[in-house]
Length: 529
Image (cartoon, rainbow, N blue to C red; front, side, top):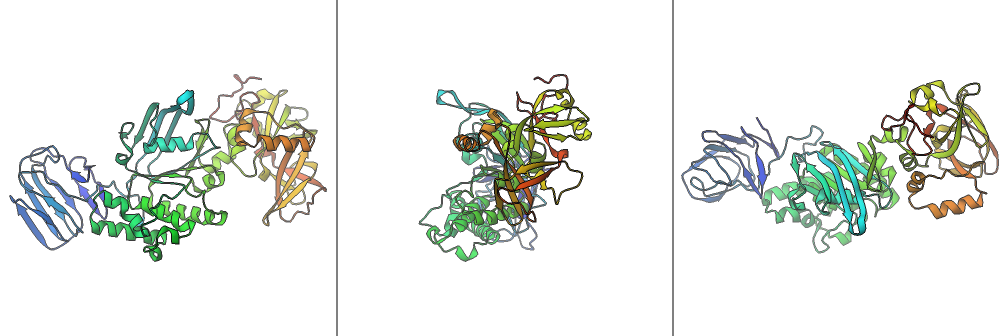
């Protein structure tokens, strides 16, 4: 028995119910009956064998029809039970029965709040999707990604990585060159945007300046000929949800940036779509407002539970918003996982350098055995726990060979406050950045910056700036350590830094892949120099 969700009502039919062009279609074979229940109401009115057009107020309507049509093949009884706000019924008996303004919804997410009409959830799948522009420029290159029902998926990467192109392709605003895009159980390659059951939120708000907030929220519903009472309900619910009730009669010019963005989100919410697509919606806001809007977005997703694909270049946004984060580079998927997994177990140098702020520190190093496993770089030698060697498949084959060592700033600590078992190195701090809760200590190491295309891409176009800094410090690398705010570290002063070597990362110098990561092909037998 299929049970699609209709606002605050449940429809039960013997076969799938489809929504098309503003009418509910109930396909039934001869002798079968459909019953659609919208609640409980004592009043009952029956219309049989009559031609009429009538707006039905709250109550119960029973319509018995004979014959069939292409729009609504129905033989048997079709029952609607109130309360209903408005329902139009056209020419009952020997012509199609049309129940207007009654969109069929899939069962609500248990996370969805009771105040919302109940948004559908749909999975989104990109299967070998490609997009090639004129001149052979590949914006998407064999992109494979599945967004689960109700998931908040963030697409992140530097400028030009293909994240906005991927979003626009899902929306139907870009025509893909190859592969398939599915929303729910439908392949939507050939469907126009209006038929894909999605709602978009843009960076520039895209509000109508001559309309009030209420009219902006309702405009899309009016174009779809939604009943006035239903429009009022959805607008009221969305305004309450987003804190827009005091501003419903204002025009966009009288709103702040954050308020305008909430109106843009509300316009998407009232659509009650299968999925939200958001293209850098917070990038026009100041830093403080972005933080509060991130929290609001999280709360909205918890309440609505609607599948969401969100594009951003800001990896802090990606880490704080996403159930999963998809990292893109040059149109190709690098890694899609939970934010914490991306931080703790990046699949390659690009992901390691792009995710995390401040960025991961890199150096070319030698993996040696000596008196025990150790990694040597820039005049330092750090013991590597045996558990790390054993836990990274194929890492033991790199003894006596070069590796790229990666250490996150958060895995350092001032030796005076660190675990006594952590090994320590002596550095001279060049610059300190006090942030109240922590201090960033920036220091040079006697090793050149790592030259690898993955690290260059992760720097997102900062090559010139990096070259200038390198020249100023004599070709050395600048590393960053995040230490306790209690540290007495000062610019120009020596500092003993402790390192949690159980959390160091190793990458293959040639491929840039993380050694021993389950998603890479680097194993002991197949590793290359």
